[in-house]
Amino acid sequence: MTTPRESKKVLRQEALARRDALDETWRIDASLRIAAWAEEIAPPPGSVASGFWPIRSEVDVRPLMTRLREKGARLALPAILDKTTMIFREFERDRTLVDMGFGTMGPDANAVVLEPDLVLVPLAAFDGRGHRIGYGAGYYDRAIERLRADGHAPRLVGIAFDCQQVDRVPDEPHDVVVPEILTESGLRRFAASR
Image (cartoon, rainbow, N blue to C red; front, side, top):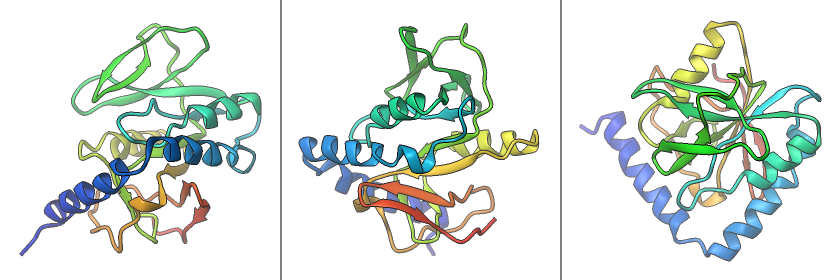
């Protein structure tokens, strides 16, 4: 019998292969279409919006982050501290970014640690219920659970291309469900699962 972990690995590989096959120019255009949704998802001015530095063939959320800043949000990027811990540090213009591993960049240790009000969540695959498959390390699941344990409940918006949708993501108790997914075709909202 296949375990949820094994099933997720296969679904992740298939979804990422579809994403990798997208034309680079098309991906840029789709990322700009996603950025047009800033008005819809922007938190109130002065709030913190956390994005991510794109890797490989991911949606480039930098145009979306720029628009969120223009709407008054303070920006943050994830910072990997060790094999299990990720925090969010302020992302300011002209600030040097450092290698965070996995091909991504983030603010250095001198940047202010923030608790985001909006978290743009990268993902490898998602289903029609808002269940997601990350890249397998569990950083976002743990970071979001830590924020919730501290009494902070950020709005979670998964970011992906439509081709990353799968029929069903196997449920596991530690998985954080993302109630909204933003793709090139628009913002999808799902019924709250937990």
